[in-house]
Length: 386
Image 1 (tube, rainbow, N blue to C red):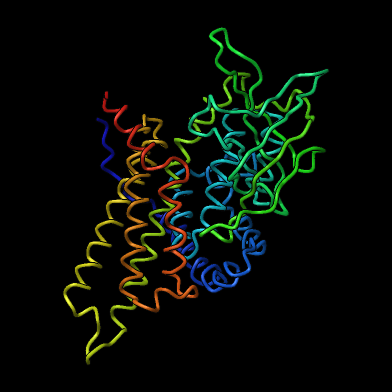
Image 2 (image 1 turned 120 degrees about the vertical axis):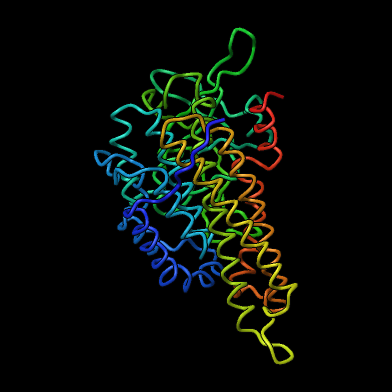
């Protein structure tokens, strides 16, 4: 098993962490409750993140990026997610699911046309994989794309698609059945569908338990026609290419989870030191102190697992196992820390204006999105040879 022992951040990465942390504390956090209540994506904050270069961190400068690494992206996502998971996932999905598949599989023309504005934070993009009967089970995909007179004609539906219906969404990449293989299995391809294409309908947003600020919609495609050159990557490799992007995405998603766990820890520590009961702070009670100590242990484990996977990715070494380990460890850490922080706050933790209440609502999806805990266990066991 390959181990990465040197996880120390560079001076530039430490500077980035400090910069994004300050932005999260002074801009994101003060507005989080307002936008969570309104269930609106704060376009001013997204624009500011674009100006900071956050959406372009892992992309080369020739495509509008910053020429940095996936580790840098993880740092930014972690710090934003401390304050607001919805903002963190907007960045994570905007890069990992929106821009990265086009950067990895697209032609030069597609990269310059689509990745550049995405990397600059001027646009958002979604990836339409999940359907009512398909997602992890790609064979269940019902959406079809038929090639007619140089155009793909797309019909079908997608659900739970992030960044798919915002005011600045420029495209959604859609997986569709484009034929059948010799063994009868569906041939799945990925096709870029620009926003506003006739027949491409974005339905109203979901009424979600959490992530209220994140833009998430079901989509309908009715005889949607796009040029043949909108095919992303090789025909028939749409799902395979997306799985590669999903491995990378799990690393970034783990950073989101780690940030959420860290945010809960910081709120619990602040409250435990300032809240006095019976003449002393509640943190002086051993059962509270021990609960917070366990929260710190979870954050530490999640961060180590996340950055080991990120460093392996950047080094070009196999990281599938480490990505799944990081995703499972960090998502469970976030959910456990949210529950414990809410308990420490007592009744105050049940008020929506309290950041830990928002983390409590938001964190459950972390054990579901981008591969459930059960999927991670499946990947891990397979990587171990079972």
